Length: 449
Image 1: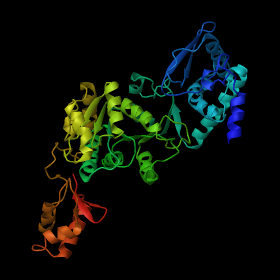
Image 2 (image 1 turned 180 degrees about the horizontal axis):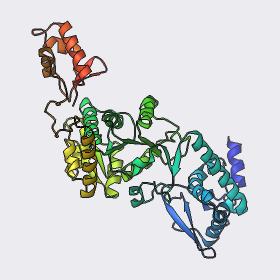
Image 3 (image 1 turned 135 degrees about the vertical axis):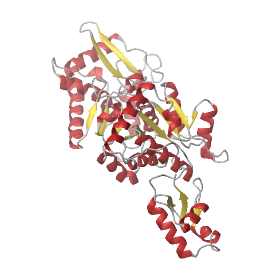
Image 4 (image 1 turned 60 degrees about the horizontal axis):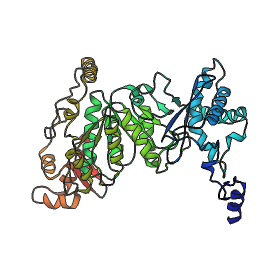
């Protein structure tokens, strides 16, 4: 191991002043790879062509020197033959995949030592291979030059150069709300995320989230339950499901006309640094971000901060002040986020044009299906479509709460003077079938919103 490190050091050029090996980042003409952190534009005066590249370097490099800019202009001339739209669309893929080429070399690439046509060939072959893998996955990709690319993403700083997509790409331009929160929600947090997503999806809004454990998964399930549209923004490649237990949910999203989106190439594993990058894409595609539950050091704070930087509205569901998961939304409310308890709190804040479009779509849906009523926004009224409860069911419901699960043994103890255990079991079974009660792990029960 030590000998390998010494060999790499010997291959590096020596600094003329100190005589020590010069780090790769300081090599003239060295191209360290693309990143989403900074976007540079290079202009070759001879061809008047703008060459886009992404550079990772601490601190961010303002501009390349003229020699390097000219070199990359020639590389891109080889990558884009005249009147070749296909090759032009591969350029953003090249920008993303160059990091893979860089990782294959221990000392890094010194592209200035290679002829431009050779560099273009290596990058182009990598892009062609990625495009073939996308086709094998029955997926597609979008670049900012495509009409289907989300318009709201073009409004943010440093939009993703490529979006890998499975499912319906048209959903990306529809009005949507991003629902985010902790991976370990309380029954109250899970219920609120599912209820708000379900109610908003019924009114035509696209529910966007990251398909992580907890609040994200509840948001997607709420939208699917309402028969609405949902978009999952991943921090991995679209062929790498994370977490694994959400495989069925991912398949259900695509099957019901939803979309899975990622700005990371196929095969990208769930590295921790990917998720903050994913969060800025999630907030950028939405018209607002809804925070349900989040701890003091939750990654949800990153999404909320990105939303504020991008000019998006931030909504927060208030929580119990003694619950650590309530710290995030309660703090956001103190800082100016809108307190959200029902779908109407979000609906009345939508831009007028967006609200008119959604209302027209809802009216058309109701006219085609007269029996479907949306109802008002209330946390306490009984849902009009549910069948009336029996006396035993009503007694059980009186003991259950929406924000705290009750263990079965404790429920039987509370009702032992009014009902026998068999009647309690039957009532719980009927309440579960009707969607009024949900069973949690450990034989615990909670009322549904």
